[in-house]
Length: 362
Image (cartoon, rainbow, N blue to C red):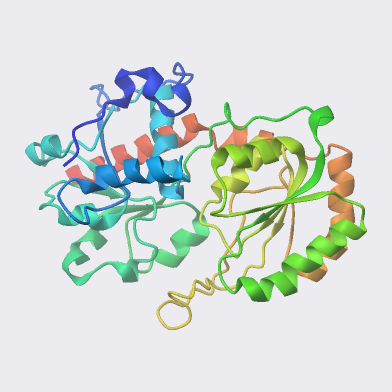
C-alpha cells in the first residue's frame, strides 16, 4: 500500500506550486486543535501484481507522454491545493496510520475499491461521487448507506437522498490563479465549441452540433472545436486564452469543472441545458428514474452567460448572447471568485468533515 505523501511538506510539489494561506479557518468550537484530515485517493487497483498500480502510469507516460487528468484526480488535486492555502493539515494515503486510529475520520475520494483492501473501522466521508448512484453500492457494503457521502450539486443530492440519508453537497474549488483571463486584444477566436456530448453522439452531431456550427459560420463567427477526453489541460487553457466565448455542450453535469475553468478564465458561456430526467444509459430507464430535472450548468448565473435547450433555442438566443459578449456585459470570473475558489472549497470540505465527527460523537 502507498506510503504517506505529505504534500504540504514541500510547496514545490503541490498542485501548481501552492501559495501562502490567504484565508484562515475558524478555530474549533471546543478550542482544541484543528483535526488533520486523512485523505485517501486511488484511481486504479492492482491488476497483475501487488503495487503495479504505481508502475502502470509511469509506463503509460513513457510510452504515450503526459496523461489526461481525470475529473476525480482534478478534484483531489484542487482539494489539496485549497487545504494548503488555508493551512489545514492532512495526510494522503497513510493506510498504516488510519488502521491504528479507528477513531479518526477517513476521507475516501476516488474509486471505491479501496474499501475492500482491509476492514475499515473508521467513520467515513465518501466521495465526491464515489458511486454514480447509491444503487451501485454492492450488497457487502450496504453499511455504507449509514455513512456520509458527498455529491457536487443540489440536483444530484436530490436524486440520491432517498437512498442515502447522510448526503452533503460539496463542489471542489477552481484554481483561479491558474485559470485567468486573457486581454481582449489577444483573442483570435470568436467561439470555442466544447463538445462533451457523451451518449448518442451521432444523433446529436446531426441534431445539435452541426446546426450550431452552421449557424455560427453563417453569422461570420470563427469557431474552434475541442472534445472532452481528447485534449490535455494545457491545450484547453490555450484554447480558452484565444477565445472570446464558449458554447458548452453536455447532457448534464454534476459540477462541470471544465465549464467553471472557462468562467474563471473570463470566457462567457452559452450552454446547452436541456433539463429533464437523468438519462445516463447505464441507469436510465430501467435502474434509475430521476425526473426532478438535471442541469449541465449547476453553478451558473446571469454573470456567466446564457443557456438554451435545443438547436432552435440556440439559433433564437445566439444574437443576444453574442451582443452581450461584444459589449462585455458578462462577468463570469466574478461568479467563480464569489462561489468556487480553492479556499472556499477547502473550508467547506473541512466544515463538513467536522460536522461528520460531531454527529459521530452524539
